[in-house]
Length: 383
Image (cartoon, rainbow, N blue to C red):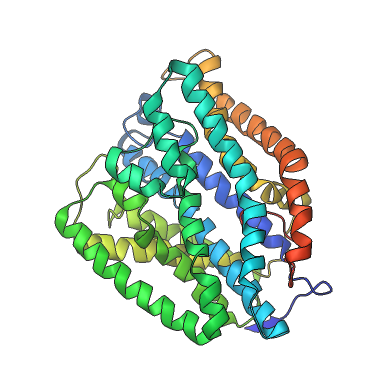
């Protein structure tokens, strides 16, 4: 495997990772749009193979884990380059950059969620739930009361990313690569012991899916990939990239269909299933990231969609809810009508994200430059 470094001036620029963000968002969108349990349209189309369709839809929800692995990879890569360049890590500047990137759109999304709840039916329970989101403890609320009935519920993942940011700059600052290796090993051991416990006590799927310690394995996958590459970009043949991506998808599907690492409307499968299922999810995310890293196929439209994918992620559930509520319901056997609605939802989501990026996010992104030692040149999803 030949390797090369990729700089633009003092920037670490990987446009193909914006394409991967676009792909990861598409996975998440499909999970939230397509039916994952008994549905007449699916039964008519796939008949006895409907179960495979449902499990494929559920596994597409691991697009969130792909975001986690990608975020961890880029954050660690930039922090390690900063330490190599300046012999230090400016933690204060790191947190300012994160705040400027995450908080403006995040709190805008939560405000929209509050207004939606109050204007729809005065749902104060939903407002209280979003209060936990506001202090980045969404998993506490979901464990206690389940998923909130609000289109801003996908923002639970940002709480977990913010918790990741509390730890990683200090590991790089005080220990660099060695401490990142040690910390990753410690987290993997702790996470698997915790999964063993969760399997024994039979927790619900929503508890498992939103638990920070469980999701930490995907962050570790991104960190370890960063450490093993050591700043180098793999030059892989196209066929191997396709194979790696397909293997990642297979890992996700196996984690649901055979291992039952996600068990929507089913009982907890037990400790070893949870342990192996989550290992497959994290491994699949790492494979997909490696498949894209260094790829030369970077169509401009996909790079742009990756750049605005944070806004797409924030607004997609709200837009989907509005589309479903405003258009006439599709007949159960008319799958084409349903797909047309989905296309409209995607188009409106892109429009909302483009407006958000241009008028809300960009002014704050420009402010990041004076707090940046090694620029990524990628103003995309939650770096």
